[in-house]
Image 1 (tube, rainbow, N blue to C red):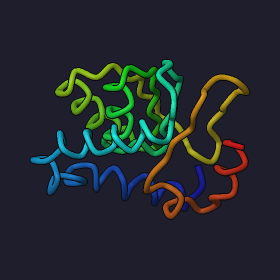
Image 2: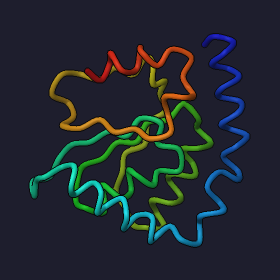
Image 3: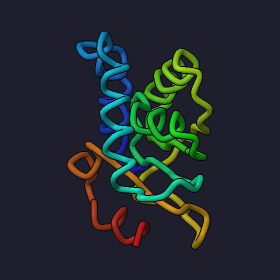
Length: 135
């Protein structure tokens, strides 16, 4: 891992302890909002295979799973993934969580129907590498 990536990982491991805590009391409302937004985006009643890259605490992945979809959440920070796992258990959401680098994630053609991300691009040293992987 590069020095920049080491610093990014260190930052998100540190932030994992308090990231999103100010909104924890309204997690159900946030999930409901995301479910509404995602149902408009997906425009299908069929189960989709989705991956959220930069999942953080997993709110978007949990929202998709609550809609009945197969969801994988990927994050560079194991500490963030631990928080996502705790949130998924609390919400009884079945999501697969994987540690990985958004700029080097091996996405295979046809493996996922949708690739989602929020709050990720600004954290990447080379966001174009992520965008090219998802194209």
